[in-house]
Length: 329
Image (cartoon, rainbow, N blue to C red; front, side, top):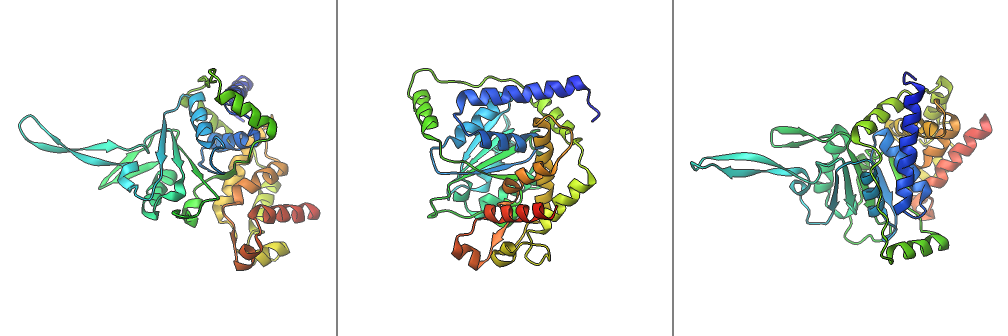
């Protein structure tokens, strides 16, 4: 690490304050908050999946508030067009009657973009996000416009309702660093949610960082060390998601049609570096990789017909891979 000890301590303090402010507004969901921070500090995008009413929108908005980032919400619907989110050229009339075109930015030009119910939009509109998520730019006509930095797409989808939805294609799922499952609150958490939301005292997150500090943290955390044997472990874990791999567990060969592409191991390493720093370490461990593997790979594994018919979850397959690799160590 090239940063000073004081710099690292300042980063840790800022991240701790972010978590504290998020906790003032959001009840529970510690694991979800932790994984969202992995995404943001690694500079990636997140896909949040959970039933309606679990506070996904509020969580994303609160994170944007704590870091003083511009926030834009796009409610995806079947009639939403690409220009509705990217923006479009509009005609302007001068004082002498002359005309010119000016680009009117769409809601995609925000630091934190909440793509709410992303699977409700048609593939044409979903594809408008691909360039933004990968290149951090938007092209309209012959002009390319840079997006703000930092830039995050935090998308939500409802796993229950299938009518009127358009499942995300594999190429777009691959652009998300992590897929995060938002779970139902416990009885105690549900009681606290009711008390907070039905009283006159609404908690508001305070700004504890700015975009410049966030960019510094993102850049610095890329310097977290990854030993060669740890990188080999990550690569082998990814290779074991492929049914044709000789060392893949039986569950992979039996239930998977395709395994993860290279972005899977890139995501694991990026998220593991953040997790290591949050744990007070400046090097990635194999335990870091085991912990981030499920959210980093669950949306990159594709079940075959037998796996779908048996109701096998990608999470269970990833756990079987980790278990098999741990036995070999």
